[in-house]
Image (tube, rainbow, N blue to C red):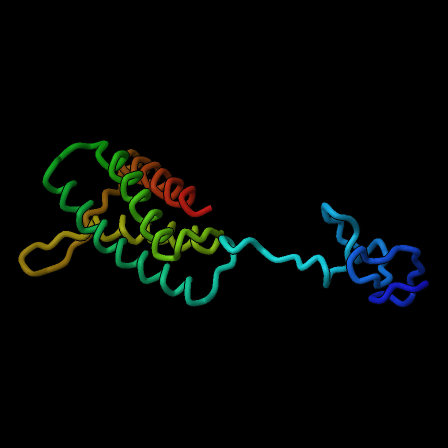
Length: 167
C-alpha cells in the first residue's frame, strides 16, 4: 500500500476515521488513534485565533489607553514629586493597558497582542513626559544615568505586566 499524500512511501497504516492509507510523516496521533491530517483537523484554540480586525481593535484600544494613561501618569508625576513614583505607576499603567486590550478583543491572547500592549506602554511613557510651558510643548527627560536606569526599570515592569495579561 502507498501513502495517499506521499506516493513514494509504503505503509500498512490507515486513518482510523476514513481509512485512507497514511505514512508516519503525515500521521497525526490523537487520543482515539492515528488519523490523517484532514480527519485530525488541527486548529488553533479560538483564544489564539486572531484576525486582522482584532489587531486593528487592539491597536486602537492600545493607542487610546496609551494617551489617557500617559496623560494621567504625567499629571500624577507633576503633582506628586516623588523620585520612585514611576516604579509604581508603570506597572499600574501596564495592567490597565493589558487588561483594556484583552477586553477589547474578547480575551484573545497572542504574541502580536502582547507587542501591541508593550508598544502602548512605551507610548504612554513618552506622553507622560510631555509638559506644556507658555504655549510650547517640552519633553521632560532626564539624561542622568540614575534617572535613565530608573525609567528603564519602570518601563520594563510596565511592559512585563502588560505582556503577561496577553500571553
